[in-house]
Length: 387
Image (cartoon, rainbow, N blue to C red; front, side, top):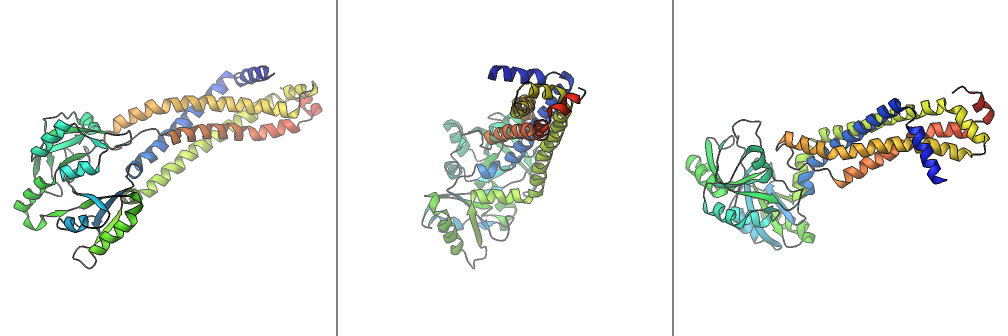
């Protein structure tokens, strides 16, 4: 019986091939768009989602643009619970032209890569980087985008720090996972500091942020409060927060865009749901006499309603499956086109599950009204209808 039922559903679904094909195509486009928009939102939160639970960021309590004295490092390191410490400055240089944007940080090389084990660098390349005052390390995605190779000279035009800055690429780092940002550049903070000291002595010996590794994730709140208490009423008070909270602070600046993208993604699903509902209503009206005949032959109202639901689900799931399969290559092509604009752009499992859920929801909801109408249809009224 079940085999005959599914065969009947399949035959009904493709009876009007043009209409069914267009409905499936609309479903493909809707599910594909939903998946891509969801991946864009995930990419926005990639930095926060990839943050370590036991890392803290210490910055100026006034604003991130105000630096902190390097001398703070010894007092922070002495706080109970601090296992390791590093520091970094945002550089903000331009490579050839402004559209080639990528993050650049002046860091304390040895301690920074110790605190961030997710950045995987070949040991030999790391040794070369640490020995070269002008050395730098770039991410694999950044290298692929611009064709960088180990040994190349990379010149940046400073914006925050004026002048042309030459670096030698000594290493290319990979990520420990797919969610690791591989589009950044790191160079020696000491090189930046000594150059600034020669040009603008008043700006030397300052850092943008301190990165603090805590010995246990359970102690991050206590340690962050202890660090900030250490610098109360100093000339540069601090604000210490988790790495995730720090990253979410940047996301909050563009929260309206993220909300708009989410609304659009669900609006697309709502539109295809309306289209599917119209398709199923047309189908039910055209087959009124057929459904009445089935009832006259002894088939229950539930069976007849199940035929409509099965047909709607089949169309929705076929379109949904094709849309999901297309999401991966289209997302990869989109990421390649965007270069380093989205450092992490991977279709997540949760996005795929949402796509499946949306396809099921569209199939079921679109069939509800036709199912209700057919289930209540009397045999006499149905047989009077003209198919």
